[in-house]
Image 1 (cartoon, rainbow, N blue to C red):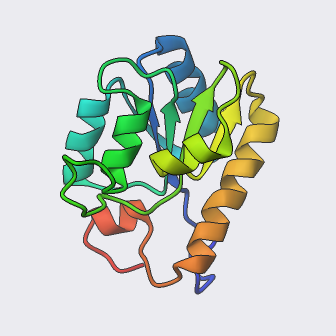
Image 2: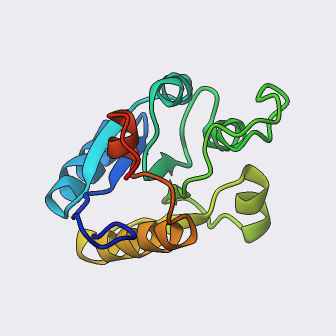
Length: 156
């Protein structure tokens, strides 16, 4: 992918949040080979701590996340939780991953998520869709640095 200026190639960095080791491994390893940088955490609390240190270009959250749960995690990342003080940690795309009964659009929107990915997931279909989502967000935010550039203190 190119930056807004088109001069450098970037690999989007995505965060996978799942306490299911099989799903976490499938997504992190498969999407790494598909052209993303990937990181993974196993809980909502870990995710909130990670976002205190850095950002990502996209987040995939297992809708069946135990503990704090996917809904509360997304609400806190978006600043919509009573514990979030109204300040979003991020406005990057957040997608819920589910193999359960379909989540309705109102539930997804109430969480603050951008969309839902339904299992079974096929990497050959998933990767292009994720690249499109990142590209659309980048086009809407051309002055924002890529996550890995921002982590290094750069502007592009």
